[in-house]
Length: 160
Ligand SMILES: [Fe+2]
Image (cartoon, rainbow, N blue to C red):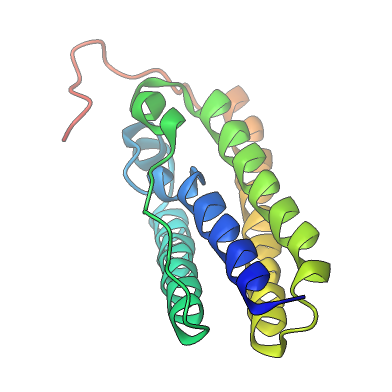
């Protein structure tokens, strides 16, 4: 595979990272009101890792003398603060699954460029770990719903 093609694939992954929804969970008021401090720390750790993925992709694209594509946010993200956690968490899991699938599809395409192959593999491993954590959160939330009333006071502010 030619270097321009590797750069194009890395830019596709950069765009895929931009469409991910996980970073929005850290600021989601319904999540923060439900989650334990450990959960909030866990999610913040994952969000920090997602930010590193963007930085690593941009750096490698530059190292290969390419031009990183424009940063874009997830179109879906605007409404995330206002949806219930039981619908939000699965949507975030689906978005994370889509991003991981993009990395898995890209692995073969960048196999001839060792730095790109290593980066794609490393980030894919992280997204797999993120998915495991998200599924644990979803599982626990579905259990908690039965015993803990998740209703919010009607007069509460959504914050920020
Ligand atoms: Fe991730």
